[in-house]
Image (cartoon, rainbow, N blue to C red; front, side, top):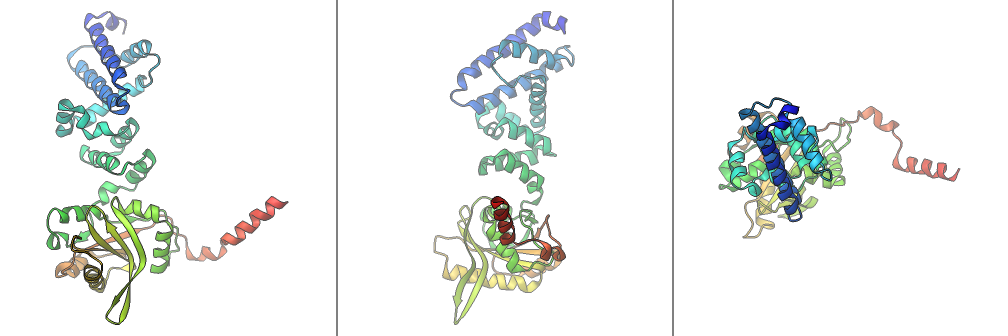
Length: 351
């Protein structure tokens, strides 16, 4: 690359990059992450452009890295690998015209500049398309996800599960509430944070979810506020109990969640329809929107669900759930209780 260094065009190019870096250093005090990402976008885009128009070869990235690290020894991020990543980041989003147009017009408004560099790299490395990547970018902004939480959501294939539940929302809710409600549901729900026996019942599932309520709320998604389990409704001279009751801040409505550890049956939808009607009458205020119901089952047959919801008058969505850490029932009795473990720890501490 010695000939490249002697090139007048290259010297002008590297001088331009250095000027941009110095400008970014000044602005960094105002908005460190955004200006850093704007700088990375600029470096990536200019390297791509120069490799198209100038005959500088594949060694350009390595030489740029060397010169920038020499000029700015106090700054991190100019390794050969990271500059390669800047180039890959730019090329990835170049597939999505809307992002490129927004980035060119107003860099600070593009969503990719509103999340850290590490999250950006994670998203483009794990996403099959710009559409999927943009979904995770927006969710990261919306929920303020850390890198660990973002990784978890990508590994659980949130993009593929979002909005996939069978529902009658389009028929029973006005737009745009119907679209937002549909996107709120997932199918399946992943309860990987639970450890249950293979023969767990609804009470065990419900208790485990409440014991892990923070994880459960994360899986449900942004906007859910937990109001109670086995929520009592007095109707006529009888008491009825809703498995789980939530209020959704964005939808501005109550959400009734019923859990079933068996295959979906049509009568489940009828009972949920009854609960939704009761909540609308007994709990909801006139400012609240129509209550929606979510039925989470062990499994379902799509055709049966569609028939069951066809003439239902209340908005209902049906999803499955999956467990990734099931404990075989025959092993459960052999496990020590919490009391036994605590007693053993105390014994060892006293020895």
